[in-house]
Amino acid sequence: MKVLIYNVDGLTIPVEVEPGLPFTFHCSIEECGKEIVIEGVVKTVNEDEFNRVLENTIAENSDFERIRGITARNLIFEGTVNGKEVRLPVESLDDFAKRFMEEILVLR
Image (tube, rainbow, N blue to C red; front, side, top):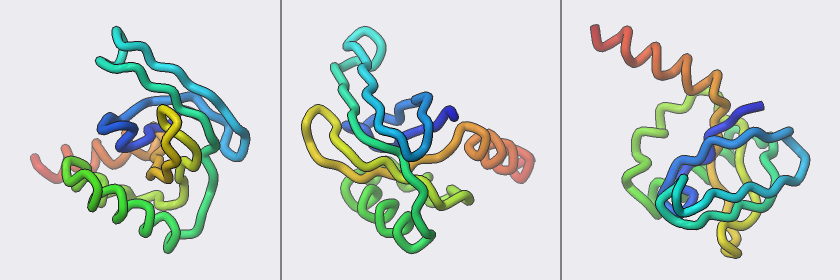
């Protein structure tokens, strides 16, 4: 499953994962503008847990205010980014595309 992990050291990172299974992802300076190593798991959580992770992320980095619009509120990343323990909101690429299209269509 392709997902977007939000606020990975200030970036949104697209990753191919199998929910519930551990993974490691490396993004080079050339690809991401800085070295990023992600290790952990994308897991399904209830909506309350997702909302806590989402609000903590926005409180830490207000640039991610727009992700409050995520409608499928059930995936988070739990693990490390460059060795730092994190819990971050995740959105499937399919859900992102649907949300994006709905926003575009509403704006017309």
